[in-house]
Image 1 (tube, rainbow, N blue to C red):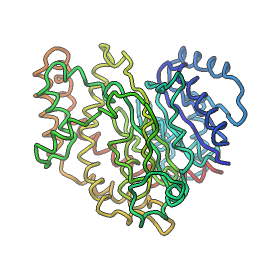
Image 2: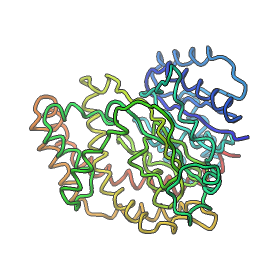
Image 3: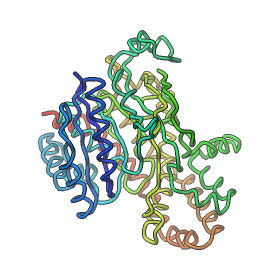
Image 4: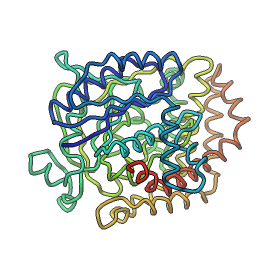
Amino acid sequence: MNRVCLTLPTNRACPAAITALHAEAAYAVRTFGAEVELLVLDSAGPGDRAAHARTVAALPAEPGVRVHHLDEEAQRDLLGRVIREAGLPGPDRLLRLMLPSAVSYGACTNRAFLLAAALGCDSVHRRDSDSTYQLRAGQPVFPIHHELPWLGRPAADATAAGTRTDLDPALAHRPVSLAGASFIGELSVDISEIRRLDETVYQDVVSLWAPGDWPEDRKRELVEESFTGAGTAPFTGDHATLTLVDPMRVDMCNVAFDRAVYERVPLPPATDTIGSDYFLLHLVHDAGLPGILHNRHIENFHTPERRTDTGFPAYQRRFVKFLLSMLYFHHVYDRMAAEGAGLLDGGQRVRPERIVELLRESTALPRDENVWRLDRVDTAYRKLGGRYTAFADRLAAQRQELLDRAERDIDAFATLTQAWPALVEAARR
């Protein structure tokens, strides 16, 4: 019987999401006989945490489902014990990388990975608090339906059972390492206002996450599909394919990883950086590890906080930091794609030491391309006027800090990746 971790990291009020997640956990038990560790990692404020605690307490008992609701104090305590058990140098820095004071999309999921190891889980299934399940005939469309059957098993097993496939038969002996889908609804990055204000500015800004040397037509294609997920068409029936999953077709609100992936390499712990949690999607793809791409897309929505006077500049800064991170990540992705199966050891598991080397190598890149990105953002935002001009003024005062932070974030990721196997082993103990 598989023991799996179904997790919801959150820093906002989401009682409905917790209740819906519990229903998905119960579905996994009934349908697949799994044991489900339902893990809510709660970084919300005191009032919202209290509401979440009441929601958890009111959940009906479900055989096979164990619910864990951990606030940051409980998470810090557990992480401190794991780090001490691992006996690694720089324990205070490791704790900050795992539980930073600022928002980190990668760090919250890394905490779920370590807790899943401590709970003896075979896989982690992640959802987000600003999304919800689609309904069909009044019933929720749970992604775990496609995530549970094949994770960790040889791809050949899925093929033999009749799963649609476009996988190279030479890869059939490798384990299914990922299962995922995307979302429908609003853009995954809350920048649709820019498009409404000025389509040309939107094109200019979004194209900045492409490699600087890409031709303009390729950048335009990237802009067209960026942050749009699976569009807006609702779910009408199941479709799943065994394949090398394109990272552009999966969102981190709707993904599951086998333990052989997340117990070897973590996610980037960068703070205040949109998209910092997508690294493993690229690693699984580039290493040639099979996955299941399905169409049980989750419905995305935006919370209003991002558009308030305080939320707007904070969110835009996260977006700019994402653009700057791509200087380094594109370099690493190119190297990973070139190495392919060289990223795997003899047991078909990813090699964390090689990832560390590639990350360290990228930090030596010149920053000229990122200086150019900041110049382009400054010009674009000033064209929009209003609060975008005010944000451009703020950005201008932070240029050097942002350039330095983008490089330091990659160095921090390398440090955490180097420590990660020992942390996972300590968590399992």
